[in-house]
Image 1: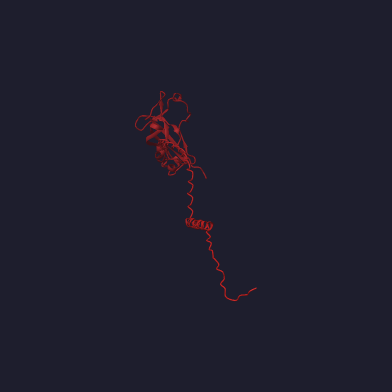
Image 2 (image 1 turned 30 degrees about the vertical axis):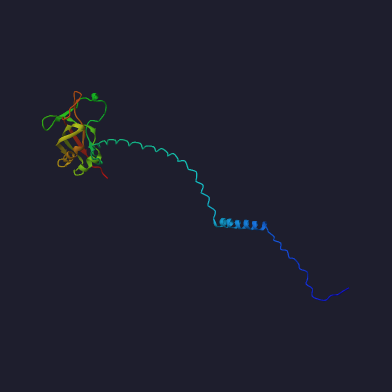
Length: 217
């Protein structure tokens, strides 16, 4: 065997370069690149709010009919107040004289009794009360007189059972002022007119006597 010493060049080695082309990776990268802007766009754009659902319209309610007010009642005429004489209390022992009021129709009355002659010469008849005077209608006047006693007057009858033109005839005791008190109270007297032949004679004269007594307390 021969051994040779020396420098021997190694045999030349031929280098070969292999180019590797990857297809999948770039596509995935591109998809990722494309997906990233889209995701970024989606992330940057906020979701739009949902439009509010409109409420269902409420149907209008029919207004209740309003009843028309009743027409006011026509005003009633006010009757005139009746003419009423002043009323009071009869003095103790006071009496009035005249035929009793027995009522009944006008045809049932007989002729009125004649009792004398009036101051003017006409017939004077007995008085018949339509309404006797009350205590109060006499008390205020007779309180100025001295009783007991009586007063006698003559009056002309007037419409509405009134008397007028009264004059004094007599009194007892003399100077007791009873006749004057009766004359002052006569405007309140209500006397029926005398009757002759069944007919009333308004305007005829009647005689009225009032007795005044004093009662012990």
